[in-house]
Length: 161
Image (cartoon, rainbow, N blue to C red; front, side, top):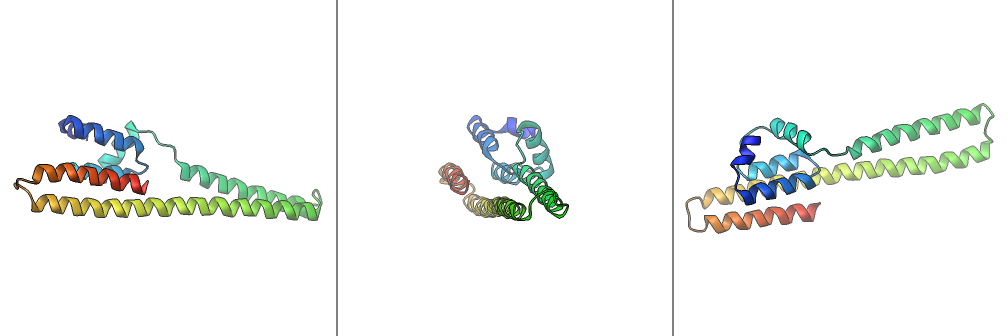
């Protein structure tokens, strides 16, 4: 992957690295790399992106938060059952905590759906642009088409982010 990046033109390399800094998924990075001519595997791309672009796993953070909230609700119920917490106070606390838990679960689910949607849109755009470039290979408009496709790719990514 490193050799491939060094083979890119300066403009493409800068664009690719800037894209990698913003991208949230190794799949997005892989699709953009393929668009630029990368022929390696997604595993190579994933390993490279993990080494060079440390990203927080917000999904993992939310999952840990969900687990902690579930345990807190369980402990609160146990406290009510043992008589350590008044039933009416405990019931209102449980209701508030469950509402917060449902909100966190919804947020995690929404983010996963958005990531899946972005991946599908970028994959479709990658395929369409690569097919156009193949059709117009060795044609006088190949250069301008290549430049236009870079702009389209960037615009699609920005709109879906």
